[in-house]
Length: 380
Ligand SMILES: *Cc1c(COP(=O)(O)O)cnc(C)c1O
Image 1 (cartoon, rainbow, N blue to C red):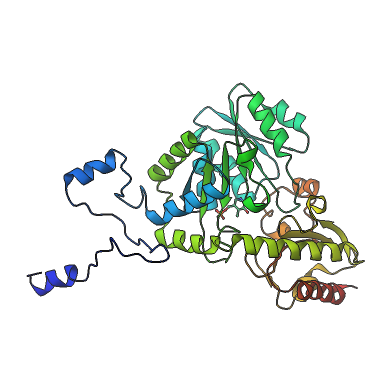
Image 2 (cartoon, rainbow, N blue to C red):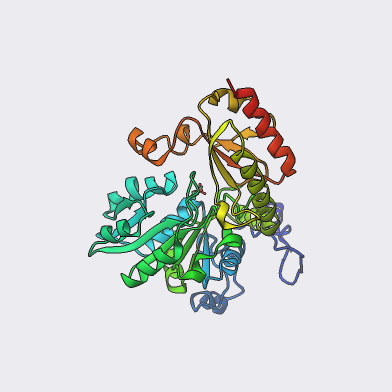
């Protein structure tokens, strides 16, 4: 290329990537894409599948949306900048000003705030009710209800949602149903195959699995995902190419991680169930010998000093999130459920001695030993 230094420095370094067959998807770390001519540009608008601008679409974010859609056996999927952004896109794919949502009263704290503090300001009202009894849900449905919203396994008490019943009620009432499948992952349950319309993931958690990315995905019916995608584009809630690439990299080991983590969780839950220093163990024991999810929540016995327990955990770190490959603990009362009114905390069973354990891929016996040691150290 003939040009002066100022021109050369920009244009000589650009490598044409077409036709280079890399083993893994390259990172398309670009805000926009180029076109050979105006026909090719027109092709974008005719839906020929090429890319224009990364907020509108990018190969890395598409790879993530489509991979999770495939695992959930859903028609289509789209990635977003966080789990909450994916939930926002899913909800706004269905609800508009004047509409009403019925949500479970034990949904993730951030989702509660999104629905309560933000969407109500835009005229979308949500009733939060206990989904333990379906009659509560039915009673909360109004003329303008459009959406039922719950989680396949809840946080931190690990209530397993009766998905068939909730989905059945939604169908009978002509409502869309959205399931947050973050805790269960598609290895354990695929709500779309049971009839859910939309399934969301905080990919920050198990989909990525390495605690180094914030990202989200919403998958489901093609028509609804097309609406969700429009919300993400117009609200600017798109995921960056690099974060999408990292999430896809983590996703490749999802099966290995979840199997190992669920087995370790089951082992730990079984051992803690018989421990005199533990008053209560929350785990879906009935769902399988090899475990069902990798979160175990315990209530420490009254004679155990909670502060001392948290100080005695050795290599197990205190982290207010979950789902990484390392075993970590969190304290729901003082973190995720901090903002709830005291009565609601008590009613849900979120006490000072409640500990949420996110079980990792270490050797199961080492995990059990570490918790036994902390319990012994903290027993008065
Ligand atoms: C973390 C989490 C979210 C929110 O996801 P972010 O990636 O933090 O925005 C939503 N639902 C559940 C169940 C979660 O655990």
